[in-house]
Image (cartoon, rainbow, N blue to C red; front, side, top):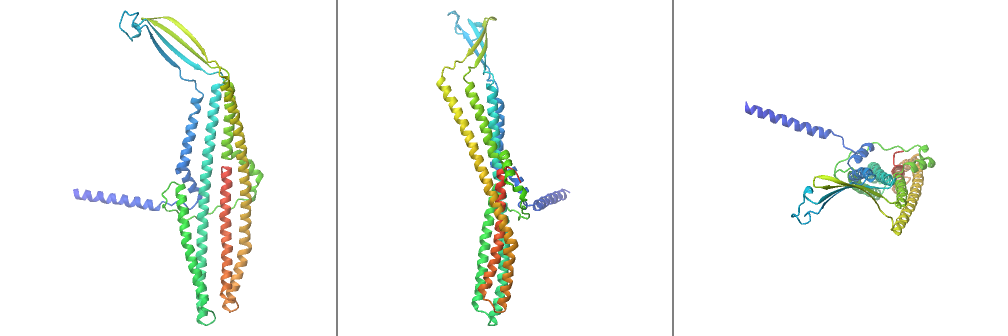
Length: 424
Protein backbone atom coordinates (compact mmCIF):
# COMPACT_ATOMS: atom_id res chain seq x y z
CA UNK A 1 0.00 0.00 0.00
CA UNK A 2 2.81 2.40 0.91
CA UNK A 3 4.71 1.70 -2.33
CA UNK A 4 1.51 2.37 -4.29
CA UNK A 5 1.14 5.79 -2.66
CA UNK A 6 4.78 6.64 -3.39
CA UNK A 7 4.30 5.60 -7.00
CA UNK A 8 1.22 7.82 -7.35
CA UNK A 9 3.04 10.74 -5.77
CA UNK A 10 5.94 10.38 -8.20
CA UNK A 11 3.57 10.17 -11.15
CA UNK A 12 1.71 13.30 -9.96
CA UNK A 13 4.98 15.24 -9.49
CA UNK A 14 6.22 14.20 -12.93
CA UNK A 15 2.93 15.27 -14.48
CA UNK A 16 3.18 18.70 -12.86
CA UNK A 17 6.77 19.10 -14.06
CA UNK A 18 5.84 18.15 -17.62
CA UNK A 19 2.87 20.54 -17.55
CA UNK A 20 5.08 23.38 -16.30
CA UNK A 21 7.66 22.73 -19.01
CA UNK A 22 4.95 22.59 -21.65
CA UNK A 23 3.46 25.88 -20.45
CA UNK A 24 6.90 27.47 -20.48
CA UNK A 25 7.57 26.17 -23.95
CA UNK A 26 4.24 27.51 -25.21
CA UNK A 27 4.83 31.01 -23.81
CA UNK A 28 5.41 33.33 -26.78
CA UNK A 29 8.79 34.98 -27.06
CA UNK A 30 8.87 38.78 -27.18
CA UNK A 31 10.19 40.49 -30.28
CA UNK A 32 7.51 39.83 -32.86
CA UNK A 33 5.68 43.15 -32.36
CA UNK A 34 6.73 46.55 -31.06
CA UNK A 35 3.94 47.17 -28.47
CA UNK A 36 4.96 44.08 -26.50
CA UNK A 37 8.59 45.18 -26.45
CA UNK A 38 7.63 48.67 -25.26
CA UNK A 39 5.44 47.24 -22.50
CA UNK A 40 8.28 45.03 -21.25
CA UNK A 41 10.74 47.94 -21.36
CA UNK A 42 8.37 50.18 -19.41
CA UNK A 43 7.92 47.51 -16.75
CA UNK A 44 11.45 46.17 -16.40
CA UNK A 45 14.03 48.72 -17.56
CA UNK A 46 16.07 49.68 -14.46
CA UNK A 47 16.94 53.19 -15.66
CA UNK A 48 13.28 54.08 -16.11
CA UNK A 49 12.45 52.39 -12.81
CA UNK A 50 15.03 54.58 -11.06
CA UNK A 51 13.48 57.69 -12.59
CA UNK A 52 10.02 56.66 -11.38
CA UNK A 53 11.46 56.33 -7.88
CA UNK A 54 13.05 59.78 -8.19
CA UNK A 55 9.68 61.23 -9.19
CA UNK A 56 8.10 59.62 -6.12
CA UNK A 57 10.86 60.99 -3.89
CA UNK A 58 10.52 64.50 -5.34
CA UNK A 59 6.76 64.40 -4.91
CA UNK A 60 7.13 63.45 -1.25
CA UNK A 61 9.39 66.49 -0.69
CA UNK A 62 6.52 68.88 -1.40
CA UNK A 63 4.67 68.40 1.90
CA UNK A 64 7.63 68.93 4.27
CA UNK A 65 8.86 71.89 2.19
CA UNK A 66 5.79 73.92 3.17
CA UNK A 67 5.39 72.65 6.71
CA UNK A 68 6.04 74.60 9.90
CA UNK A 69 9.35 73.83 11.59
CA UNK A 70 9.05 71.46 14.53
CA UNK A 71 8.41 73.19 17.88
CA UNK A 72 11.19 73.13 20.45
CA UNK A 73 11.03 72.22 24.13
CA UNK A 74 13.61 73.21 26.71
CA UNK A 75 13.88 72.26 30.39
CA UNK A 76 15.94 74.39 32.81
CA UNK A 77 16.61 73.27 36.38
CA UNK A 78 17.59 76.31 38.47
CA UNK A 79 19.48 76.23 41.74
CA UNK A 80 19.78 72.44 41.90
CA UNK A 81 21.58 72.71 45.30
CA UNK A 82 19.12 75.24 46.83
CA UNK A 83 21.84 77.63 47.85
CA UNK A 84 24.11 74.83 49.07
CA UNK A 85 21.57 73.33 51.43
CA UNK A 86 21.46 70.00 49.61
CA UNK A 87 23.40 67.86 47.26
CA UNK A 88 22.71 68.44 43.55
CA UNK A 89 19.24 67.15 42.78
CA UNK A 90 17.72 66.79 39.30
CA UNK A 91 14.12 66.24 40.26
CA UNK A 92 12.02 69.30 39.28
CA UNK A 93 10.13 69.44 42.56
CA UNK A 94 13.34 69.40 44.66
CA UNK A 95 15.26 72.26 43.04
CA UNK A 96 15.00 76.00 43.42
CA UNK A 97 12.88 76.36 40.28
CA UNK A 98 12.18 74.67 36.96
CA UNK A 99 11.52 76.47 33.68
CA UNK A 100 9.68 74.73 30.86
CA UNK A 101 10.05 76.51 27.52
CA UNK A 102 8.02 75.67 24.41
CA UNK A 103 8.81 77.67 21.27
CA UNK A 104 7.54 77.64 17.71
CA UNK A 105 9.24 79.31 14.73
CA UNK A 106 6.83 81.20 12.44
CA UNK A 107 8.10 82.14 8.98
CA UNK A 108 6.71 85.34 7.52
CA UNK A 109 3.43 85.07 5.65
CA UNK A 110 3.84 83.49 2.21
CA UNK A 111 7.29 82.02 2.71
CA UNK A 112 6.00 78.51 3.37
CA UNK A 113 3.76 78.71 0.30
CA UNK A 114 6.73 79.74 -1.82
CA UNK A 115 8.82 76.87 -0.52
CA UNK A 116 5.98 74.46 -1.26
CA UNK A 117 5.60 75.84 -4.78
CA UNK A 118 9.35 75.58 -5.39
CA UNK A 119 9.30 71.93 -4.31
CA UNK A 120 6.25 71.31 -6.53
CA UNK A 121 7.95 72.74 -9.59
CA UNK A 122 11.10 70.80 -8.81
CA UNK A 123 8.99 67.64 -8.65
CA UNK A 124 7.49 68.54 -12.03
CA UNK A 125 11.00 68.99 -13.39
CA UNK A 126 11.94 65.50 -12.20
CA UNK A 127 8.73 64.19 -13.73
CA UNK A 128 9.69 65.80 -17.04
CA UNK A 129 13.10 64.17 -16.77
CA UNK A 130 11.43 60.80 -16.19
CA UNK A 131 9.22 61.36 -19.23
CA UNK A 132 12.32 62.20 -21.23
CA UNK A 133 13.98 59.01 -20.01
CA UNK A 134 11.00 56.99 -21.19
CA UNK A 135 10.92 58.81 -24.55
CA UNK A 136 14.62 58.06 -25.01
CA UNK A 137 14.14 54.44 -23.98
CA UNK A 138 11.13 53.99 -26.28
CA UNK A 139 13.10 55.47 -29.18
CA UNK A 140 15.96 53.04 -28.56
CA UNK A 141 13.54 50.10 -28.55
CA UNK A 142 11.89 51.33 -31.76
CA UNK A 143 15.26 51.83 -33.48
CA UNK A 144 16.52 48.43 -32.34
CA UNK A 145 13.35 46.80 -33.68
CA UNK A 146 13.79 48.67 -36.97
CA UNK A 147 17.37 47.37 -37.13
CA UNK A 148 16.07 43.84 -36.64
CA UNK A 149 13.66 44.35 -39.55
CA UNK A 150 16.49 45.80 -41.62
CA UNK A 151 18.81 42.87 -40.94
CA UNK A 152 15.99 40.39 -41.54
CA UNK A 153 15.25 41.99 -44.91
CA UNK A 154 18.92 42.06 -45.84
CA UNK A 155 19.31 38.42 -44.90
CA UNK A 156 16.27 37.43 -46.94
CA UNK A 157 17.64 39.39 -49.92
CA UNK A 158 21.09 37.82 -49.55
CA UNK A 159 19.56 34.34 -49.52
CA UNK A 160 17.57 35.16 -52.66
CA UNK A 161 20.67 36.43 -54.42
CA UNK A 162 22.60 33.37 -53.27
CA UNK A 163 19.91 31.12 -54.71
CA UNK A 164 20.02 33.12 -57.94
CA UNK A 165 23.80 32.77 -58.16
CA UNK A 166 23.49 29.01 -57.66
CA UNK A 167 21.13 28.88 -60.65
CA UNK A 168 23.41 31.12 -62.69
CA UNK A 169 26.35 28.87 -61.87
CA UNK A 170 24.41 25.87 -63.22
CA UNK A 171 23.62 27.78 -66.41
CA UNK A 172 27.29 28.76 -66.76
CA UNK A 173 28.38 25.14 -66.19
CA UNK A 174 26.01 23.90 -68.88
CA UNK A 175 27.27 26.51 -71.31
CA UNK A 176 30.88 25.76 -70.39
CA UNK A 177 30.32 22.03 -70.94
CA UNK A 178 28.86 22.88 -74.35
CA UNK A 179 31.82 25.06 -75.20
CA UNK A 180 29.67 28.23 -75.31
CA UNK A 181 31.19 29.97 -72.27
CA UNK A 182 34.54 30.24 -70.54
CA UNK A 183 35.35 28.54 -67.26
CA UNK A 184 35.80 32.00 -65.82
CA UNK A 185 32.00 32.43 -65.84
CA UNK A 186 31.60 29.46 -63.50
CA UNK A 187 34.36 30.75 -61.24
CA UNK A 188 32.77 34.20 -61.08
CA UNK A 189 29.44 32.69 -60.05
CA UNK A 190 31.20 30.67 -57.34
CA UNK A 191 33.04 33.79 -56.10
CA UNK A 192 29.72 35.65 -55.88
CA UNK A 193 28.28 32.78 -53.83
CA UNK A 194 31.24 32.92 -51.45
CA UNK A 195 30.68 36.66 -51.04
CA UNK A 196 27.02 36.06 -50.28
CA UNK A 197 27.84 33.44 -47.66
CA UNK A 198 30.38 35.80 -46.09
CA UNK A 199 27.73 38.51 -45.91
CA UNK A 200 25.35 36.05 -44.24
CA UNK A 201 27.94 35.44 -41.53
CA UNK A 202 28.33 39.19 -41.01
CA UNK A 203 24.55 39.69 -40.91
CA UNK A 204 24.14 36.92 -38.34
CA UNK A 205 26.75 38.57 -36.13
CA UNK A 206 25.03 41.96 -36.47
CA UNK A 207 21.67 40.36 -35.66
CA UNK A 208 23.09 38.87 -32.45
CA UNK A 209 24.49 42.26 -31.47
CA UNK A 210 21.16 43.99 -32.07
CA UNK A 211 19.31 41.28 -30.13
CA UNK A 212 21.74 41.71 -27.23
CA UNK A 213 21.11 45.46 -27.31
CA UNK A 214 17.37 44.89 -27.32
CA UNK A 215 17.60 42.45 -24.41
CA UNK A 216 19.60 45.02 -22.44
CA UNK A 217 16.81 47.56 -22.96
CA UNK A 218 14.29 44.95 -21.78
CA UNK A 219 16.43 43.95 -18.74
CA UNK A 220 16.73 40.39 -20.08
CA UNK A 221 19.87 38.23 -20.37
CA UNK A 222 21.93 39.25 -23.39
CA UNK A 223 21.59 35.85 -25.03
CA UNK A 224 17.86 35.42 -24.32
CA UNK A 225 15.98 34.41 -27.47
CA UNK A 226 13.76 36.88 -29.31
CA UNK A 227 11.02 36.13 -31.80
CA UNK A 228 11.51 37.23 -35.38
CA UNK A 229 9.88 40.61 -36.10
CA UNK A 230 6.67 40.13 -38.07
CA UNK A 231 4.90 43.48 -38.35
CA UNK A 232 6.69 46.64 -39.45
CA UNK A 233 5.23 49.99 -38.52
CA UNK A 234 3.56 51.70 -41.50
CA UNK A 235 4.62 55.08 -42.81
CA UNK A 236 2.71 57.95 -41.18
CA UNK A 237 0.26 59.86 -43.36
CA UNK A 238 1.65 63.11 -44.85
CA UNK A 239 -0.91 65.10 -42.85
CA UNK A 240 0.63 63.77 -39.63
CA UNK A 241 4.02 65.22 -40.60
CA UNK A 242 2.95 68.85 -40.94
CA UNK A 243 5.67 70.97 -39.33
CA UNK A 244 3.35 73.61 -37.87
CA UNK A 245 1.15 71.01 -36.19
CA UNK A 246 4.11 69.06 -34.85
CA UNK A 247 5.81 72.25 -33.64
CA UNK A 248 2.78 73.07 -31.53
CA UNK A 249 2.71 69.54 -30.13
CA UNK A 250 6.43 69.62 -29.38
CA UNK A 251 6.20 72.95 -27.55
CA UNK A 252 3.39 71.66 -25.35
CA UNK A 253 4.46 68.03 -24.80
CA UNK A 254 8.20 67.68 -25.24
CA UNK A 255 9.58 66.23 -21.98
CA UNK A 256 12.72 68.37 -22.06
CA UNK A 257 10.75 71.58 -22.56
CA UNK A 258 8.33 70.50 -19.82
CA UNK A 259 11.24 69.99 -17.42
CA UNK A 260 12.87 73.30 -18.39
CA UNK A 261 9.58 75.17 -17.97
CA UNK A 262 9.29 73.69 -14.48
CA UNK A 263 12.82 74.87 -13.70
CA UNK A 264 11.95 78.38 -14.88
CA UNK A 265 8.89 78.48 -12.62
CA UNK A 266 10.95 77.13 -9.71
CA UNK A 267 13.58 79.83 -10.31
CA UNK A 268 10.87 82.52 -10.39
CA UNK A 269 9.55 81.37 -7.02
CA UNK A 270 13.10 81.16 -5.71
CA UNK A 271 13.70 84.77 -6.67
CA UNK A 272 10.46 85.80 -5.00
CA UNK A 273 11.49 83.96 -1.83
CA UNK A 274 14.92 85.59 -1.88
CA UNK A 275 13.33 89.05 -1.88
CA UNK A 276 10.82 88.02 0.79
CA UNK A 277 13.71 87.02 3.05
CA UNK A 278 14.25 90.72 3.65
CA UNK A 279 11.32 90.44 6.06
CA UNK A 280 12.23 88.88 9.40
CA UNK A 281 10.79 85.64 10.75
CA UNK A 282 9.30 85.25 14.21
CA UNK A 283 9.46 82.80 17.05
CA UNK A 284 6.86 82.68 19.80
CA UNK A 285 7.08 80.78 23.04
CA UNK A 286 5.53 80.16 26.43
CA UNK A 287 7.50 79.49 29.59
CA UNK A 288 5.87 78.30 32.84
CA UNK A 289 8.17 78.21 35.86
CA UNK A 290 7.70 75.57 38.57
CA UNK A 291 8.60 76.14 42.23
CA UNK A 292 8.43 72.85 44.10
CA UNK A 293 4.96 71.51 43.17
CA UNK A 294 3.23 74.64 41.82
CA UNK A 295 3.54 76.91 38.78
CA UNK A 296 3.75 80.49 39.97
CA UNK A 297 5.20 82.29 36.92
CA UNK A 298 4.15 82.32 33.26
CA UNK A 299 6.18 84.01 30.58
CA UNK A 300 5.31 84.75 26.94
CA UNK A 301 8.13 85.26 24.47
CA UNK A 302 8.44 86.85 21.03
CA UNK A 303 11.69 86.51 19.12
CA UNK A 304 12.52 88.22 15.80
CA UNK A 305 15.61 87.69 13.69
CA UNK A 306 17.16 91.00 12.67
CA UNK A 307 18.18 91.07 8.95
CA UNK A 308 21.42 92.98 9.43
CA UNK A 309 23.51 91.05 6.88
CA UNK A 310 22.25 93.09 3.96
CA UNK A 311 25.19 92.27 1.71
CA UNK A 312 24.49 88.57 2.15
CA UNK A 313 20.86 89.05 1.22
CA UNK A 314 21.70 91.21 -1.80
CA UNK A 315 24.07 88.46 -2.97
CA UNK A 316 21.32 85.86 -2.55
CA UNK A 317 18.93 88.05 -4.52
CA UNK A 318 21.47 88.51 -7.33
CA UNK A 319 22.02 84.76 -7.31
CA UNK A 320 18.29 84.13 -7.70
CA UNK A 321 18.13 86.60 -10.60
CA UNK A 322 21.06 84.88 -12.31
CA UNK A 323 19.52 81.45 -11.76
CA UNK A 324 16.26 82.64 -13.32
CA UNK A 325 18.06 84.13 -16.33
CA UNK A 326 20.01 80.89 -16.76
CA UNK A 327 16.83 78.80 -16.59
CA UNK A 328 15.12 80.96 -19.21
CA UNK A 329 18.13 80.86 -21.52
CA UNK A 330 18.43 77.09 -21.09
CA UNK A 331 14.76 76.65 -21.96
CA UNK A 332 15.17 78.77 -25.09
CA UNK A 333 18.25 76.79 -26.12
CA UNK A 334 16.43 73.50 -25.62
CA UNK A 335 13.44 74.76 -27.62
CA UNK A 336 15.69 75.84 -30.50
CA UNK A 337 17.48 72.49 -30.51
CA UNK A 338 14.27 70.48 -30.31
CA UNK A 339 12.66 72.38 -33.20
CA UNK A 340 15.85 72.06 -35.22
CA UNK A 341 15.87 68.30 -34.64
CA UNK A 342 12.20 68.15 -35.60
CA UNK A 343 12.81 69.96 -38.88
CA UNK A 344 15.84 67.79 -39.65
CA UNK A 345 13.96 64.55 -39.01
CA UNK A 346 10.95 65.67 -41.04
CA UNK A 347 13.23 66.43 -43.97
CA UNK A 348 14.94 63.08 -43.50
CA UNK A 349 11.72 61.08 -43.40
CA UNK A 350 10.46 62.84 -46.52
CA UNK A 351 13.70 61.99 -48.32
CA UNK A 352 13.54 58.33 -47.30
CA UNK A 353 9.90 58.16 -48.43
CA UNK A 354 10.88 59.45 -51.86
CA UNK A 355 13.83 57.09 -52.10
CA UNK A 356 11.64 54.10 -51.28
CA UNK A 357 9.02 55.19 -53.80
CA UNK A 358 11.69 55.64 -56.46
CA UNK A 359 13.25 52.26 -55.71
CA UNK A 360 9.89 50.47 -55.66
CA UNK A 361 8.25 52.12 -58.63
CA UNK A 362 11.20 52.74 -60.92
CA UNK A 363 14.62 51.34 -60.09
CA UNK A 364 13.56 47.82 -59.11
CA UNK A 365 11.28 47.14 -62.13
CA UNK A 366 13.93 48.54 -64.48
CA UNK A 367 16.65 46.42 -62.88
CA UNK A 368 14.52 43.28 -63.11
CA UNK A 369 13.78 43.93 -66.79
CA UNK A 370 17.46 44.51 -67.44
CA UNK A 371 18.42 41.29 -65.66
CA UNK A 372 15.84 39.20 -67.50
CA UNK A 373 17.01 40.64 -70.79
CA UNK A 374 20.65 40.01 -69.90
CA UNK A 375 19.90 36.44 -68.84
CA UNK A 376 18.14 35.70 -72.12
CA UNK A 377 20.94 37.32 -74.08
CA UNK A 378 23.57 35.36 -72.13
CA UNK A 379 21.81 32.09 -72.90
CA UNK A 380 21.85 33.12 -76.54
CA UNK A 381 25.54 34.14 -76.41
CA UNK A 382 24.77 37.79 -77.04
CA UNK A 383 26.25 39.21 -73.79
CA UNK A 384 29.03 38.03 -71.52
CA UNK A 385 28.71 36.83 -67.92
CA UNK A 386 30.03 40.13 -66.55
CA UNK A 387 27.02 41.94 -68.03
CA UNK A 388 24.71 39.42 -66.39
CA UNK A 389 26.42 39.91 -63.02
CA UNK A 390 26.14 43.67 -63.38
CA UNK A 391 22.38 43.35 -64.03
CA UNK A 392 22.05 41.11 -60.97
CA UNK A 393 23.91 43.63 -58.84
CA UNK A 394 21.58 46.38 -60.04
CA UNK A 395 18.60 44.39 -58.75
CA UNK A 396 20.33 43.87 -55.44
CA UNK A 397 21.24 47.54 -55.14
CA UNK A 398 17.64 48.59 -55.81
CA UNK A 399 16.33 46.16 -53.20
CA UNK A 400 18.96 47.32 -50.69
CA UNK A 401 17.99 50.95 -51.31
CA UNK A 402 14.37 50.00 -50.67
CA UNK A 403 15.17 48.18 -47.41
CA UNK A 404 17.57 50.88 -46.20
CA UNK A 405 15.05 53.65 -46.94
CA UNK A 406 12.45 51.88 -44.82
CA UNK A 407 14.94 51.45 -41.98
CA UNK A 408 16.06 55.09 -42.05
CA UNK A 409 12.44 56.19 -42.19
CA UNK A 410 11.68 54.15 -39.07
CA UNK A 411 14.66 55.72 -37.31
CA UNK A 412 13.45 59.21 -38.25
CA UNK A 413 9.95 58.33 -37.07
CA UNK A 414 11.31 57.14 -33.72
CA UNK A 415 13.29 60.37 -33.32
CA UNK A 416 10.21 62.49 -34.07
CA UNK A 417 8.17 60.55 -31.53
CA UNK A 418 10.95 61.01 -28.97
CA UNK A 419 10.71 64.78 -29.50
CA UNK A 420 6.93 64.61 -29.12
CA UNK A 421 7.13 62.42 -26.04
CA UNK A 422 4.36 60.25 -27.51
CA UNK A 423 3.45 58.29 -30.63
CA UNK A 424 2.26 60.07 -33.75
